[in-house]
Length: 164
Ligand SMILES: CC(C)(COP(=O)(O)OP(=O)(O)OC[C@H]1O[C@@H](n2cnc3c(N)ncnc32)[C@H](O)[C@@H]1OP(=O)(O)O)[C@@H](O)C(=O)NCCC(=O)NCCS
Image (tube, rainbow, N blue to C red; front, side, top):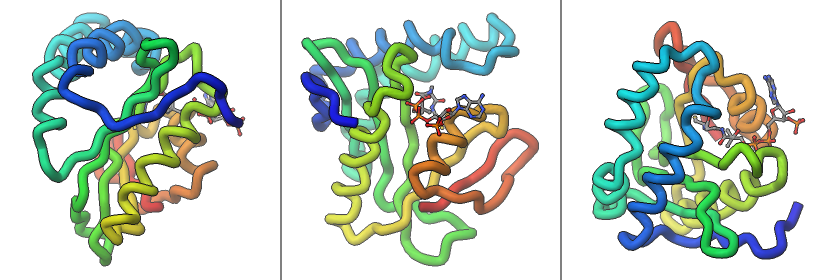
């Protein structure tokens, strides 16, 4: 589904504060429903910080995309290239972060972000992409399966790995 007005572009260092604010605002509504509020607050304080996004942007092996409309960020994706995995024989890339604001779930933004990352990875001849996702994250798993990922292995009681 095309989204008029939606722009998916490479992230720049000017985006890190807005990205961090976006992630902190939506994580409580997209995180595990049974998450302990204290744990969630600790995670938000430590993980989607401007500093973390800046480190990713400065990593020459990382690519990041943001989805925005009318200057508002409502999604982002980050991939590492290459990122070898012991259970994947060819050199692969890893989809490290993928997040779309709840108001845009099921509205094609995921397709637009998903489209950009593989196109860029294929330029590096990385045709396999893997990711980790919590087993409880049913919506994300359904979304990834719909887009061609399949289950490879369960790495512990909470995570699975998919290969594209
Ligand atoms: C993961 C994410 C990017 C997927 O994007 P999306 O726009 O929601 O994806 P889609 O709507 O295209 O696909 C979701 C599918 O899950 C299905 N679904 C929704 N809730 C579900 C549930 N509880 N159990 C199983 N399937 C579910 C939907 O029906 C849809 O399938 P359909 O199109 O065949 O009906 C988005 O939900 C998101 O950003 N979530 C929060 C962050 C996150 O969890 N990121 C992934 C980290 S690995």
